[in-house]
Amino acid sequence: MTFQFAVLGSGSKGNAALFRHGGAGLLIDAGLGVRSLTERLASVGSGWSRLAAVVLTHTHGDHVDTGAFRRMAREGVPLYCHEEHCRRLAPDPGFAALDALGLVRCYEERPFMAPSGFRVEPLTAWHDGGPTFGFRLEAGAGGKRRGVSVGYLTDTGTWDDATAEALADVEILGVEFNHDVALQRNSGRHPALIARNLGDRGHLSNRQGAELVASILERSRRDRVSHLVLLHLSEQCNRPEIALREAGEAVRESGRQVLIHAARQAPAHPDLAFAPSRSSAWRGHGFAAAGARRPKSRRAHAESCGFLPGMALEGS
Image (cartoon, rainbow, N blue to C red; front, side, top):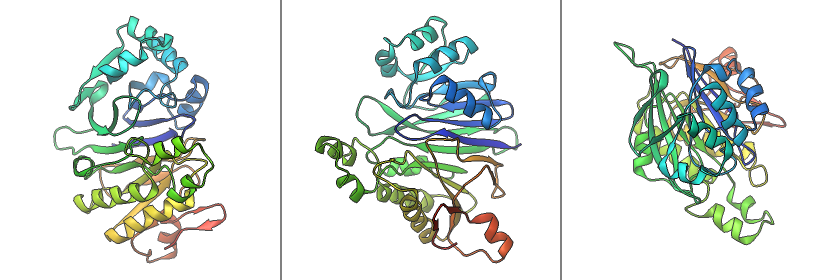
């Protein structure tokens, strides 16, 4: 069975990501306007009718959208969120429409089953503005099938050993690489905003994200973590090439070979098709990769390495 993971939007202007197996999809966050979300779902071969559920990380405005909630209500798509999220979203008319139809389901800080066989394990994140969670998502397991798993963690100012342990052995790992510390400090932003972003309730820097990746890889079996997706890059305080370089260093030091992708605000990217093995594939455009070892042939090089405009990744 082929699985799909696609980031529909990642950044301060809106966040959403799709994990799909068979015909059913699970959406992480709905922080894009309904038109953008509809178009980006279509661009990766999905749509509202193929969504089994939406799970919410937290209630900041770049992760929720009232129009998307209204569309979910019309389509009968349930929303899974924490009880405190419900309280914070109560004044939102789109959320109210979902709630009136009985489509709001509250999760606790323990694994739960979402429709179509998705297993969701909430992971504590440290972020201002109320309870925030990352997720370990699993689907396709049954009988002798191992199934696949995706790790997704963004909007957190720090992490601990329990975080790394919970994200070990996933096929696709999505981790926040929000900012470069020097660019953040010299950004000209209000000092309070800079302090917030650098603090333990803000966002992970490139260095913090790379350290988390290294810890996860150390805990993971050799046949796992075939793709690494860098999430929530700041448009003002980061550069894709800087984030990719930091992530690439962590991968190379692990002695592994992992495809690395820098998610975008727009359009949807990356869009990955994969199976529960190291034979994972990529599709879409503009992906960037870094590996622990130089490929042995020109063909392998072309398939495993990519470029961003104006720069070549180290090791390519």
